[in-house]
Amino acid sequence: MRRYGKNPDEDDIRTRPNPKGSRPRTHTRPKHEDAASGMVLTVDRGRLTCLVDERVVVAMKARELGRKAAVVGDRVGLVGDLSGAKDTLARIVRIEPRTSVLRRTADDDDPYERVVVANADQLAIVTALADPEPRPRLIDRALVAAYDGGLEPLLVLTKSDLAPAEPLLETYRPLGVRYVVTRRDELAAGDGAERVRALLRDRTTAFVGHSGVGKTTLVNSLVADDRRRVTGVVNAVTGRGRHTTVSALALPLAKADGWVVDTPGIRSFGLAHIDPSRVILAFPDLVPGTEGCPRACSHDEPDCALDAWVAEGHADPARLYSLRRLLAARERHEGD
Image (cartoon, rainbow, N blue to C red; front, side):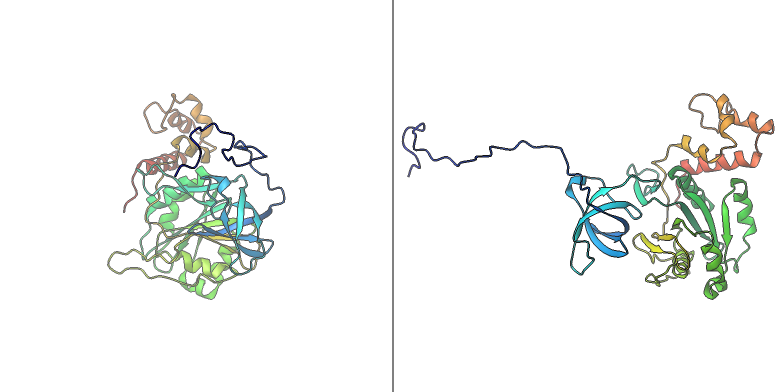
C-alpha cells in the first residue's frame, strides 16, 4: 500500500512541523560558574571520590571534558548532587590547572605516559635498607620524575635496624636531597612517624616505593584515618613484596595540616615521557656551565662544557657525577 499518491509533489503530503528549525551544533561549552570546588581523593573505574566542603562526594567526569582525565590531587569543579548521600552522583565539569604532576610510563618503550598524582608539593621515595635490598636505579628514576614534574624529593629510608643507612646516603648527599631514616620499632612506637610527619606539614606529599619496603605501614601511621591498615609480606624466595595498595589514595595527615597520597607499589618506573634536557634544571649550580655546551649536548660527551666548569672550581665534581648518573638512569631500562 502506497503511503502517498502517485504524484510525490501533491499538497497533501504530511510534514512534521518544526517551528524552531534545526539548531546548528556549537562548540560553546557552559561555564558552570556555580560549580563547587573539590579535590579528587581517589579514582576507581570511572568513579571519582572527591572532597567538597568536608563532604565526601562520588562523581563522574562530564562528557564535555572529552579525553581529559582527572587524577588524585586534582582540583575540580563539580555540579549536581553534592550532598554526599548514598547512591548520589555528582558531575565533574572542570579540572583546574595543575601546579605539578608526577608522571610515569610502564617502561621505557611505552609511549603512553600516566599522570599518577597532580598538585603534590613533595615526592617521598620510600626505600628499605634491607629485606628487600635497596634499588638505587629505581630511586634515581623517581628523582628524575620528581625534578621533571616540579616536586621536591624526600628520601625515606626504612628498616635501618636491619642495615646501616650511611652507604646509601653517601650516594645521594651530593644531590642535596632531604632524607629521614626510620626503624621498624620506631614506627611501631610512633617516634619514627613523628619525625617523618615533621617533614610533611602543610604539604601534599606523594609516597612511592616498590612493594615490601614498608610504605603503606608508614602511611598508616601518618594519616588521620587508618582506612588503609592492610600490610603485605615480602616473598622469601624472590625478595619482592606483595602489593597492598591497588590505587592512589589521598588521606589527611594526622596531627598536622597536610595530605598524604599513597600510591601502588611499583616494580619499574618508566621515563619515556621525560625530556633529558629538563633534568639539569634540578642542578642550578651546573646550569650556567652549560652555556658553552654544543647544541643538543647530552652533558655526557667529550665536548661537554661542564667538565671545564667543574675543573675551574665552579661546582663540586660529585654534583656533575650525580647529574650524569640520573641522565643515565633515564636511558636504562629498570627491570631488576
